[in-house]
Amino acid sequence: MVRLSAFAVCLVELLVHASSYCTAFDDAGCSGQSVVRDSSIWKAAPDKYDQPGGPEGLTTMTQLNNIIMGHAATQIILAGSQLGLFEFLHENGPQTKGTIEEALGLKRSDGSTRPIEVLLLGSTSIGLTVLDKREKTYRNCEIIDRLFTTGGWRSIADLIDLEAIIKYKGEFHFVESLRKDTNVGLQEWPGAADNLYSRLPQTPGAQKIFYDLMNSFTAFSIPCLSNTSKVAATSFKLLDVGGGAAVAAIHLAKKFQQLSITLWDQHETIEIPMNHITKAGLKGRISLLAGSFITDPFPEAGSHDAVLLSHQAVIWSKSVLLMIFKCVLNSSMMRGFHYAEIVTEFYKRFDKTQILLVKFEDLVKDTEKTVRQIFDFLCVDSTVPLPSLNKIQPEDVLDIAMGEHTSTVSDSEKKLLQEYFHDRNQKFSEVMGLPIGELFCWSMPKK
Ligand SMILES: C[S@@+](CC[C@H](N)C(=O)[O-])C[C@H]1O[C@@H](n2cnc3c(N)ncnc32)[C@H](O)[C@@H]1O
Image (tube, rainbow, N blue to C red; front, side, top):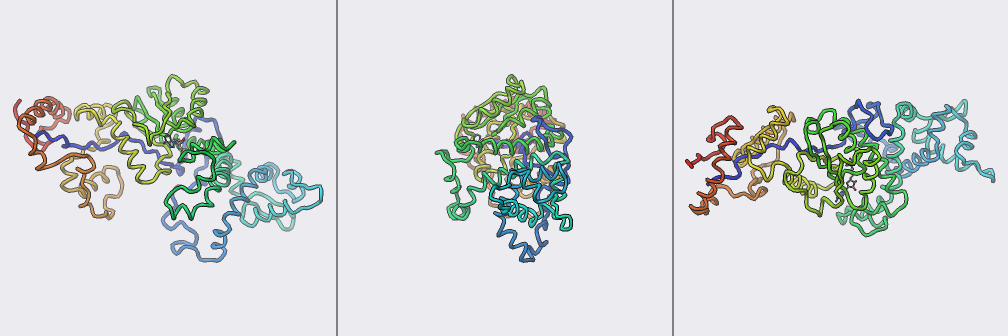
């Protein structure tokens, strides 16, 4: 019996583009927006014990209070941003309460100074502004001033808007969401769609807030990927799944001249990338696919040789992600082709040291050893403790029967399969430079 499952080609073409805000980048991105250039003010994933109070967690009532009053802090920074407090102080240096009140348009005809006092008390008590008690003046804290100087404030202001305006609404339903394990907060947004992205257009201004922030982040992160990714540099057809406003697609198309891109996003949002692509003069290089990658079928196998999932891994549940990865794999150049063709395509694009080929039998027989070998290849710690892997049945995942199941194939079917695979396996052996016996755990019958 010719075993269809002899090899699993280690996935190299899938670009899971997670947010990597920790790395400085050498390119301003394609959107022309200001982005944070000083990477030291960003920290990516917190260190293991990088939490208030160290490894023991919170240690003071003040820290606890800051969490309980977190809603106030969010609204104070929103007010400071939207009323122009931080911008005014950055441009003018330390200022008195009266001058700030005037500049922010908070001066009242009835003489009440409460609004400016509440704002400055709030912003100073949480450290956004600093009061010089002798001079009776206020200035920005250092980090905010530094953001203005480095050009990063715009991105932070976008982030504040998203958190304090868009996300804030849904937070009222957080407890209920946990109880019901669903996005209960969606009811805050008019519309019938089952996701926030599709409902945002029905609330004036909301979609802009989302994409302003998204675009700032992507303009910051995509150069990190494009500067190092051999996949992006060598692919010809890239599928940008949930490509948003096309910030990533435009950047990649400009940087890699050989690349054509299909951007896939929902019907309700597709006009946004369309406008950006047209403005960038890239209509011939970036095409649009309107629809849902959750409910619509993925493009057919081999139609793209790379898939970009930019800022997707962070928004989906594990089960949805697994479903997406499975579809990506099925529509990639690894499905619908024979081993020799797949390996040839990979060897064209990558150095052999960048590809790991794993025998499917090895994965089944000694899952842990094989998984650790993959970890080693990916340069991640291969000595980490792993959960029990003896429950993993790769056959279940791949719908492929191993061992005795093959005995149900009749002799004539076996012959047919042997004939079909004979030349292809021969070719595979040539491409790999290895005898068939080392590639498969059966010997190939004579034709
Ligand atoms: C977090 S944003 C990322 C946008 C873009 N990839 C980037 O990095 O800037 C998620 C994007 O996925 C799109 N999206 C969400 N669910 C989708 C679905 N089921 N089908 C197609 N697009 C979807 C949203 O409209 C949104 O543009």
